[in-house]
Structure formats: structure tokens, C-alpha cells
Length: 610
Ligand SMILES: [Zn+2]
Image 1 (tube, rainbow, N blue to C red):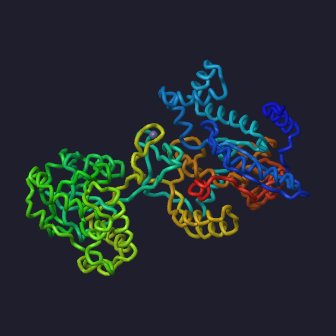
Image 2: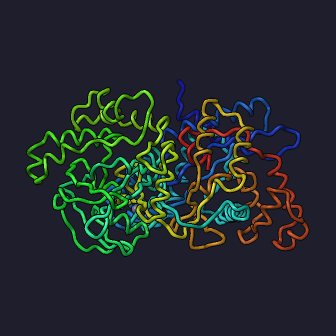
Image 3: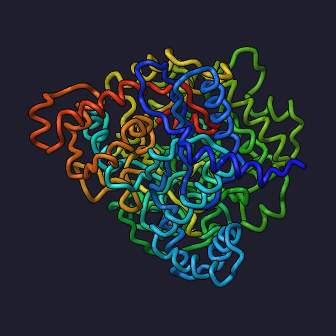
């Protein structure tokens, strides 16, 4: 009878003994270089790994059968904070993590005492890495993967660090790396920037940062600061909304008195503002009072809106009922709600006389857009959130594509909406009538350590500037030389390339490679995993020739990978014979470039494009 456990083991052992997957360069044979992304060594493999690696393996075996000299290598990614987070959780005796790790280890060891011992050893991050890379290797072998294991490495190996240092040395030299002010997702507990590897479900959700413009409405000697994504609408403001039950503060912020939510004060502290809180108050205390419009001319009433989220931006919003369905319907609801008007001692007649101010013209619309779209979707109250979301979306889309600002917007008259939004915010900030606040695009974002993720502004952040000189042009050129299967995903690459602007490439904490020109920084986990396929071609020879990290200076990689430099000179400087240097270069030139890469779609927006 067919017994897979027995027969698979038999042949897997035989493959290993005969070293049939160990591929050496051979000028007589046509090469074929296949890679799949190296897995993260912080836990066992998941089914998605199985898919990508088996895809690669099927092709590796197919091309071998066709007579090609096939190289299919594998390594382990360990960079960043996930492994450190496991170690510090074990140290803190965090039960969730201890349990999860015990479950993982129990997959390989039945002896519970042994399991406990192994999990306790995870307090040292290198034990996590060594344990999971070893178990993963065993799993790969039992899946029958045809990897050349001689080339294995981790991204924490000292020789690999030298390779990444070389990469960053060149990125800097070519002007692709810059230092400056940059909003980043940040964990206040770890005091560190966090990326998708550090955030719970980080690879599934939008990790964008939303920039709100904070408009300063003059109010009682200071400013009631309302935030918006549509600064071009300030000429249509009729009132301000505040959450009557929300917690607000008055604070001195960079020498001005600001009225904002308590949460906003904390956010701004992390975004480089000097915040001194003077007093705290409930929103209801200022309901019914009046602020002035941004140019300090017209009075604007402050009205109660329990829909205002104090955790979003400044926790104060302004109302543009002609162009925002939510504002329009909230105003109608308020007019009808005589109890609420009485409760806050508001003037019924005054509220009834608030009339939407249309500032954006759309062809063919007989009335102002918010009313049209509320009617279209049968919105009756502000509780019809689903309908309201639809109405808002369509209203905005319409205005964005075909709206033009009218004469009420003074010098912005005739501008299209997107152009006006940029110009108005630029001018208001210049005139000190506005500022910026950043929040994570996705709500309830949590670091793996359990803390809520916020946005911080780092003053001296190192980042990759994808817009620098001809970088994008080069990337598109490269993409055009690739076949993408299925071909429809080419569009995703193009979209990501166009979207990329700046991206932080280093952190203050984590495993990995130090930035060669600023050693307090560690290169983060997406930035050190873009060209590692080149390293596979020589990693086993570096070991074989006993080459130490101190010998792997940038000129070494220049010679091997770029065919640059003078071999005699180099050989003397780093004490590696010319013969060995030539051998390494030939190995690279033989295998490179990569012929096939097998991976998952979700990596298009990170590893594959960055
Ligand atoms: Zn954290």
C-alpha cells in the first residue's frame, strides 16, 4: 500500500544525500534562476507560504526536467521588530504571546516541559530566529521543496548586513535617500516607527496616513480649530459642530490659544507641537457661543453635533451644508429637534435662518449638491448612515471631477476643486490661518505590543525619495522588460509606482542592518529585502572561502555585482585572491538576472515595488 510518510521520506533523504538540488554554474548548460520570497522566521509557515513556494517548486522541477540548470534558493527574513516584540513579550510574561508561542512549538515537540523551556529561551531574539528557521527548514524538506540549502542566510547575518550597507551606500550616493521631517505611524510605547510587520493585521489593512487641514476660527482670544479634508469649502461655512459630551481642552500651542479635543492635544504633542493645557471642558459648555470665520469677519455659531468624533483630527468640524450631505441633514435634524434647541438654550429662529451657501457650481444641477444627493438616496435623518455615505461619495466625486468654484470664493473663483483644495490650504497655512494634523487612515490601529498606533512627525527621519531624479523612470523601464502573470497585475505595479512618494527606510530599533552613514538607525524590513536575490548567487561561496564581514567592503560588491574597480588593487586591500574574486563575479554573472519570481499579489504594494 502507498504510505506517503514512508515513501516521501525515503526519496527526500535520497535527494539530500545525492545533493541533486545543489546548483553550480555550468557554462555548458542554460541556467534558470527561480525565487520565492524568504519567509519571516517568527513562527511556523502558513498556507499562503505553501502556495507561493510550491508554485516556484513546480516550475523549478519542470525546468530541470527540460534540461535547464535550475537554481531555487531559500533564506530567512528576520529584520525589524516582530522578533524583538516576541522576546520582549516573553520577558514581560505576556500570556497571549506565551500561549501562541507554546502552540507553535507544540507543533514540533510533544514534551510540554521541553516546550516551556524552548518558549522561555525566546527571551533572546536570536533563539526565536534560530528555532523557527530550523523548524521551517524541516517543514520545507518534508514538503519536498527542491531548494539549494547551501545558500541559506538570514537578514541578520553579518555578511548580509555588509551587502545591504553596500546597497544603501549607493542609494545615498545617487540621491535617493534623504533626511527630513516626515509623518510616520508610531507606537508610543515602543517609541518607534511601525510598519506593516509591526501592526496587527498590518498586511491586510490600509496603513496610510491622512492629512487634515486644521482651520483656525477666531474664538474668545484664541482659535477654535476645526479640521477638514476639503479646505476649498471654507467659503461655504455656516456653523461649527462640536460634540456636546466630548472632552475638550484649551491649550497654549506654539504661543496661540487653541480649543481642541483632548485626544487632539495628545496627537499634536507627538507631531512636534509644544502643547500646554490650560483647562479642560465639555463640548456642551461652548455650544451656542460664536466663533468668527477664518478671516475674522462674520460670526459663526457653534452647534451641538453628537456625530463629531473627538478622536478624529481636532474633534471639531465646520459645517458646509451646501456641499456635505452630513452637514445638510444634521442642520435639518437640529431645526426639527426643539428639545435639543431648548436644552442648549439656542435661538430657534437663528438656526432656522441658517441657509446653505453654495460655492461650487456644477452644470445641470438645479439646486445645491448636498440637497440633490440627499434626495436621490432618500436620506431622511442623520441616522441613515449608509445612504449618507453613498450620497457623500457621489456628491464629492461629482464636485471633484466637474465642479468649479464660484464668485463667493474670491480669488479662487474659476478653479477646479482639487486645484483649489491645494491652493487654499497652502495660502491659509502661509497666512497662519491653518495648520496640519495627521491621523492613521484606518481607525483602531494597534501595534503588536498592544498599544494604539498614532502618527508622529520625525524631524530627522531617513527616507527613500521615490520621486528623486530618474528613479521612477528607471523602475518603469525595468517593469516594461518583465512579463507579469496574470498580465492584469501590471496595472497594480504601475499604480503603486505612480503613487510612491517618500517612504521611511530606517528605524531606531529592531534587528537588521545599521545605516552605514548614520549608525543609530536600523534599515527597516521592506527596505532590506528588495535585491537580496543577488546575494543568493554568492552566499555559499562567501562561506566556502571563509570570507569575513570585514572583507566585504563596498568595493568588493562593486566588483562582483557591477564589474567595477580594479581587481589587483581590491585583492590586496581586502586580502581575497584574484581567483576567488573572479569566481564570485562569474557565479553572479552566470545566474543573474532572476528568471522567475513566484509570490503573492499583496506584495505588489510593498516588497515587490519598494
Ligand atoms: Zn508597540
